[in-house]
Length: 110
Length: 118
Image 1 (tube, chains in turn red, brown):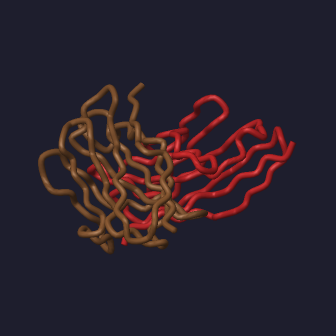
Image 2: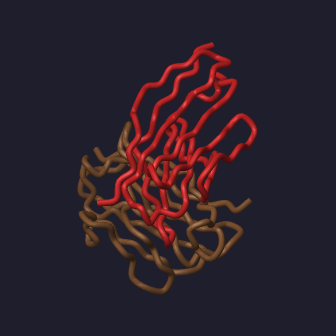
């Protein structure tokens, strides 16, 4: 059974702080890794994608991938109340089938 | 960017009735579409892969006779929940890959359909 594990949270951080979200996956053949943000009652929206080991930065977001450890993370710098949402880690193998983690709920306190 | 629509956005039905949900790719062709289900405070669970012109591929534990999928054209896939029961109440989301369907292609999600079975 291919799995994607996340801490369900909630993770609470003050406004302006760095929020760190973590994810592990079981399938070593996974090739693509994604972070989605989902607001309550809405469908997921893509925040970051990462395909190779190391860091990838996009604005306030940095994704980190370590395939040897089967670990992917998302850092949100200068967290804002509007960042409060559930963050889903998603992993894809050689095809297009994507497996999602259960999500981490993030609360950014003003 | 590519847009995927779903209709209806919300549906309430009586137990035992059937409900059809449509998923359309509005400005691109999608030979493959994916149907997910999400229960409250849980993640998206892939139900099935819809393939244009051929049978859908269902995930383990998903009843193909209960969740009928028809991918009749390159822009439309439908999910019919037959004889719906309260335990089928969930958020149903479809998605489509933007290009050839490879591992790095963007996956576009529809806005979701909230099904409530009374």
